[in-house]
Length: 150
Image (cartoon, rainbow, N blue to C red; front, top):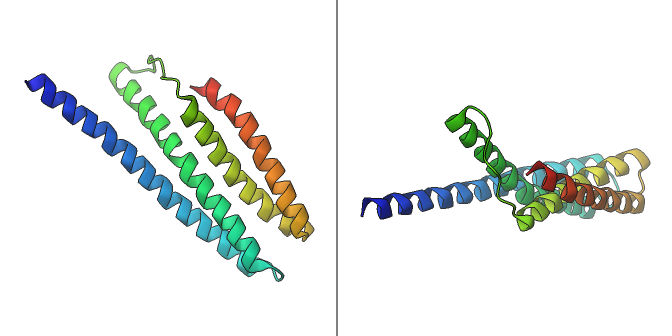
């Protein structure tokens, strides 16, 4: 009977950790989205509102997808190091989580790339196209590298 209660509390602890990671990801997404949107609005003269909203939305969604994966990876590695002194655990492969994290990283980098390209070249079409290309490249490379990291 005590085994069932310890398993239930362990399962609840994992669910709480996952919820906290998602909450922190959402908070990080809101902060980065608002920061980039405000910076875009105040820095650029033409089409600042639309461009700022696009950059802020991409940044917010990307950060909210990427941050929970980073937090969970950090928690798993620190828990393994506390018990053994070094990391000996075999990680579970979750291709969906890796792809979501890589997609989030791609969106976040695409937003920063759009802002940077617009700042340098002052052309909105070049900024959007270049940012999307950069984000796609980060997603493709990240999908492979995050798989190796696990």
